[in-house]
Image (cartoon, rainbow, N blue to C red; front, side, top):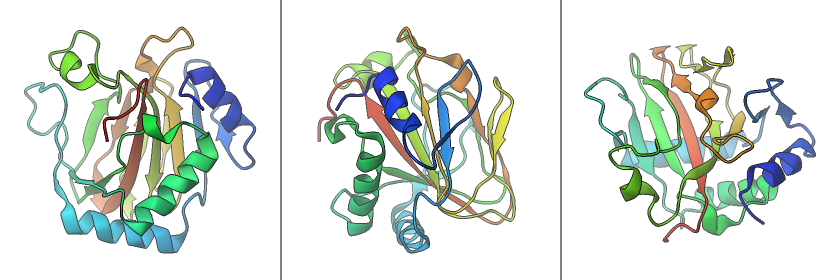
Amino acid sequence: MDATGDSVSLRLARHDGLQRVPHPKIELFQTRNFVSADLCEALITLIDKDRRPSTIADSNGDDYFRTSETCDLAPTEPAVQQLEASLASLNSIDPKLGEPCQGQRYDVGQEFKPHTDYFTPNGADFEKFCATSGQRTWTFMIYLNAVEAGGATRFKVIGKTFQPEAGKLLCWNNARPDGSVNPATLHHGMKVRKGVKYVITKWYRERPWPW
């Protein structure tokens, strides 16, 4: 039960229905129907109830860099507990290493410009965000609904784009095999052109999260 890249990758590779995206620069997996329709709807309801403007760790002067809305999902909610149990069964990462699940809502025109999920070493807020629990290791992201137009997630460095699909899971290792951060995980939550997009994001750390 750890969050080291190699062990998690091996466990995921053995999981039926989980497909590794064939590219040498990144450990990236996908699977459809990871979350049921009923659970997707329950999580969407929670996001709509408590959403707020999204923020970024290190300000870059671009007020339109991340224009979505965010919701911190309470771990006491039955829908969240169901989701957490499914993730733990899939990845076998010690739950103590996980940040609380977070939901995001993207309306028409909203996006999250190309970014990485790890905290930039020596960045302005690196010590603030990593002092206690360390760097982010793995990202698990779940689309909760299909989008009428737009809203894809594009990994520019490796030339892969994923379309929103209810219940679909993407997960990737934010580090290279040597443990350094992996710039090939750069990804863009592209603008929604029509409809609304809902996603769940679950990040894991090197050390336990201070619940």
